[in-house]
Length: 116
Length: 114
Image 1 (tube, each protein chain N blue to C red):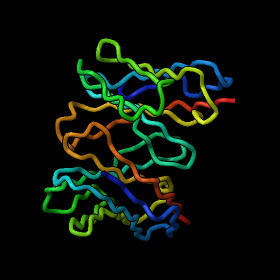
Image 2 (cartoon, helix red, strand yellow):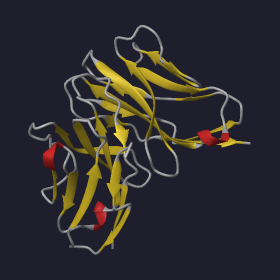
Image 3 (tube, helix red, strand yellow):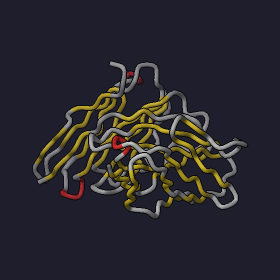
């Protein structure tokens, strides 16, 4: 497809369960970002992948959160033992190499996670 | 530390009028970029405009312009001739050279009245 895609669009889960969120970036984009947006809030950076380099995990809120990016393309964000405070929209973005400040990020439609 | 501040939680504007959405930022790095994104109710983030810290002129993109005042560390978005479709959340963001993440403000909800 032409844009960043994410699946599922909505996910409802019970507290304590694990969830996996998927992001398919724009073809050719080497940089991939995950953000979290809580209701009525701005975006919170979670993790960043650039090519084959080690990811920048500085934004992950706890060790329950992890992410991987296979083959430099698709990425999966995993949240283990979900808590109610994990409820949010999880946005994925991709861009060309992030070597400059002017790297427009293209966002996906997000996954709305609700933890009951 | 880098910080983005949007002090207007909500703004109203009459259709066809201009509106300014405020954004101030804080960074000690001289090389940075400032972005504005629009987020309609559908949830997708739409890139609007970019301003580099070394750019001499204010950025413009169609009806959007960025009023960049470097000394005051402000990067206000001006939307001219507002349209009903401009009703959305607007986020100001900053990326500092060498940093991987983009810092976002809390956003401003713009409502255009017919």
